[in-house]
Image (cartoon, rainbow, N blue to C red):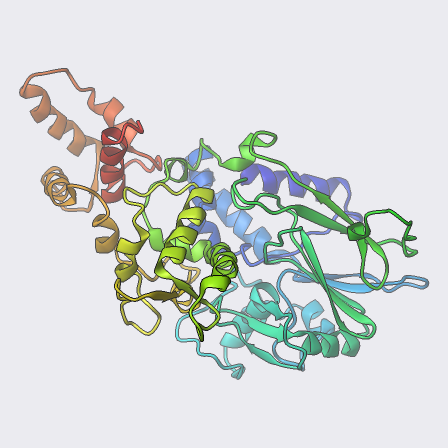
Length: 469
């Protein structure tokens, strides 16, 4: 949010030699638009100031360093690279290239876009074209470690459709080449806040996540921070060994805050009204944004079901009943209130990456393949379910569509205040309780955009008829 960014900038100004901010994958102009920051700025600042402020925020994001090295001085036990995602897939790229700022576009400006997904295949060939800058940024900001791979492999990140997956062996080679001992990264929710892996003798990798109960204070994870010291912390008998770890005996600080303790972190009801009302504007978008949490829920369900699975059932597969239950659990934790919670009925609508439909009568669901078909391309386009599919979730959607089209006199696809006023005039002429057109419009304008789209129109109908408004 604007306030969080203002706080971080204030801390940096107050303590310039003690506070260092790195760029993450969401510090991107396109994602800032898609995930609500631009709309928040528009709701808090009016006119040209809002546009100017958003552009300034995007410029700040693009100017943030891609990584920082801590330690490495005389007597230091650690020399660690702290980066959001991971190591470069191009093994010729090192700290020098990162420091020189290969995150620049061809005009030498800081690149505001960190991900380009269109047409990308599972290849790590890096062409001598303008795509190199994008690939460099993707690697550092979107990549994930393959912690079960003890080889020296670097592959395209099929799960995120951006960046790479790198084995612990590949991380070890990079760290040794650059004279480092430790790679610290985030980018993935950790149930206990942090996980540690030994890459090889003398090198290590941490994934640390510092937001508890993610997302929106509805999750179940702890938050954590790492505290490196000049000397390894002594292990005391009976002490919680989980607080310490790694090559240097660093301290792991964990905490958890709930929505009750931190209510404003649960959701911004002032500036994110669409989210607060649980609109199903894009079910595909929700799945795409939270697919890693969904996969975790499915993996937990598969573990519970493993005792009753038929012989030969491969990993990543659930029975339809178990998949439906896992999706319902995720939906509840994400605050999702669909008009229909019949996930079995929705199964045929969920399109696999191969373009085939999942048959509802199938006995099992390949949830790994299913989730791989949902991705967010950084430009606000979510794949996997069409608007028509989403609209079919609403009762009486055909009748409501006719009413919406009748009210939409200029065929713009949205309803203005004047169009609502004209429709209300007709309604009031029929008698009954008088309807205040402006009050009705404000109540229906869930995202405070100044117009009503089809999703808002139908969502308000659903809320009223279900007693939710």
